[in-house]
Image (cartoon, one colour):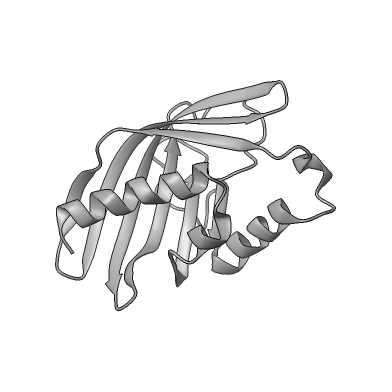
Length: 155
């Protein structure tokens, strides 16, 4: 695994989400990976402190199935999103793993409502025979202590 591959992977992941390719996006995740969105600034414990989101592979798949469901009336019309990424900063890099942090703006819209979030996303990545996969993803919202509406999709 090299810097260019890690950077391309992160950009490609955001593209998949923006294009609504959620099932393909799920294929990027390792079976034991966790998606974490802390509730508090600089939160360190996802288990003993409340989080906005702390989902394993099963819960991520359930979320994606809900988004695609015919009876999910909150998604008629469907929400859409748009990621604007800074260049990822590679914190750790070995032949088999990487840790990268990316500052980004995330916009989610549905009907007349639109919300924008400033995020810091940390990816823990692993090299597999099938390519790079997500071992963990942490999404820190800059103004996590503010009130905001429901986040329907996944930043």
